[in-house]
Length: 208
Image (cartoon, rainbow, N blue to C red; front, side, top):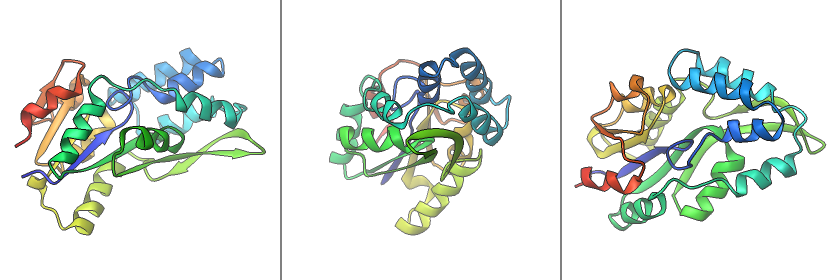
């Protein structure tokens, strides 16, 4: 019986990559998108790729960042899936290697229970190009699963997770049910199930 479901955010709950969208607003789209692609395919260390990409956001006004994050596209079926999970009494948590600017807004829209992400440093309302937070490393999602298991007294078979990229591998290895959603090949190899249809409602097929 699943009691906790953990979702990745970018390209899972949100239809796209937040950092790529922010980079486009700072005229750094091509550079950042290339690093993101290589990172999600497991070709680059996540911490190094994250800090390198955030450098390209330096100078972006925080007000603009927040405006963009308020209008990020939601993945088809996300709202219906989360509502269905909560009706079953399943806690829903989001982990993101991206930013609280986006996940906090989405939590209010979709009503998931908690989210863990990173924080874009800013000074005088302008991004500094630095970042810190809860999801900085390739191991962060798996480590946070361990924390939640201890806090909620859950076993591996009571947890499911959904993600799409290489930085989800650490949490996939800690969950009894792991679903690769429109995912990179490197993550599909770690999954118990794969969904290649871009509709999160497909995941309901796997939940008892």
